[in-house]
Length: 307
Image 1 (cartoon, rainbow, N blue to C red):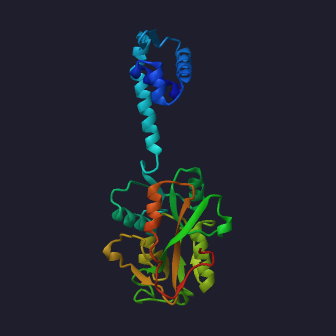
Image 2: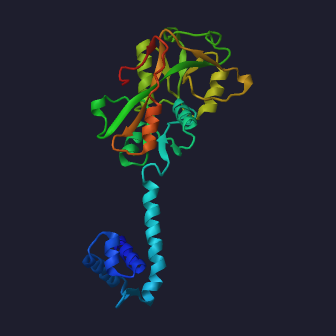
């Protein structure tokens, strides 16, 4: 059903005259007549009776009027639901225990009235696809592609460099260290069963291992965070690598240790990704909020592809 014709019908019913309705809608009286005629043809009924004083709804016209008003209200609600600033900003944070979730929480604390819809997609490819299709507004990811190879319309900005730490059990040889260098990890077994070939985080740890001669094992099934922590806590030889802001909750008797890496400090480069044509005002506010300086500890190491 042509909503312009419905709108015209309501305007005539309210004004009681085709001429006044035309003035209210800023169209010609001929256009009003054509729209009403088309709507009457579609419905198969007469909507108005012509009188010396103007136009009066017929019995069918009176029956249709409340439904016509409801259609126009539904149209307005539909438009408002996607009007920039009238819907929640939809953002991918990879994982709710990871640093991007912290960055988004900080933004929400600074803008408490902002509506956010937080999702977790699998990898950067899925995020790029979702941004291009419009199913999400932004994503926090490590961007391994050179700028010239980014999908058309996609823009990125590096917004946070997160230090990487060593996580060990209490009996590990490095558990008591206040800090260690990446070079000191040579010969130690680092177990990261969550590394998936082709993902941005696998690309990061592959380059980290190559840069410092480390052995990072991704063998065995990935049963999730808790089984990984249980294994690390009970082992004197296995350790893993985690982001400084990765949130873990473990039993006190596990005795797990976070050991900073220094000289240099490997940092994981988080970028914000968005589509340049996205007009959502909250996206602009988020980008502005994330212009804080990157992690300032020096020296640091990051992969060659970090923008």
